[in-house]
Length: 203
Image (cartoon, helix red, strand yellow):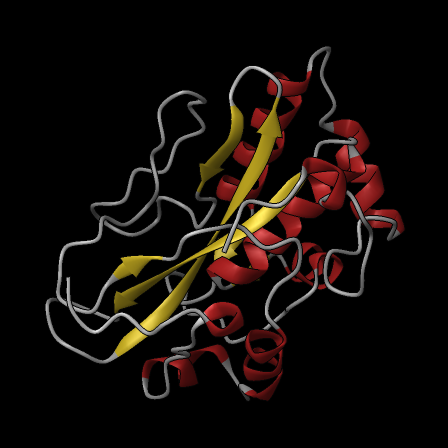
């Protein structure tokens, strides 16, 4: 999976719906004098103001950017959708990235984890993770030039998938829409491979 061209990562869509009035209004309020500062304001807002549903024991399952903003909560995927939408609303090319991680500790089950990436002239594609620092041991920061994702790849079967995606995989959207409540994820974690990449079974 190659990296997308920045020009292909500016579109409004059903999931990255930055033209929604509430998303556009927030994006405008977070705009700064330069692109990197704007990107950082958007990152900090989503990381700190949208509650990760499992950390805060909330059961809503928003998917699109506007749903996530209006709910004020969501999985890592939903928070990334909102962050990408805020960036695109400010004319910053933005995309999505994914990891495969164990759900808890060194053993299966596995789940897919989502993060975001923004194109900055001085840095190229910069990956960062807005999932929130509300879980012990996580320290997500926006530090262009120094990547600081929420989770390291430590155990057999885990990986950070190569490439970035302009839109979330259709299978992920369908799996999220099928979750009756967020807490159901713990019993039935979503484990998928974006766009047909090979499944990683060992380091």
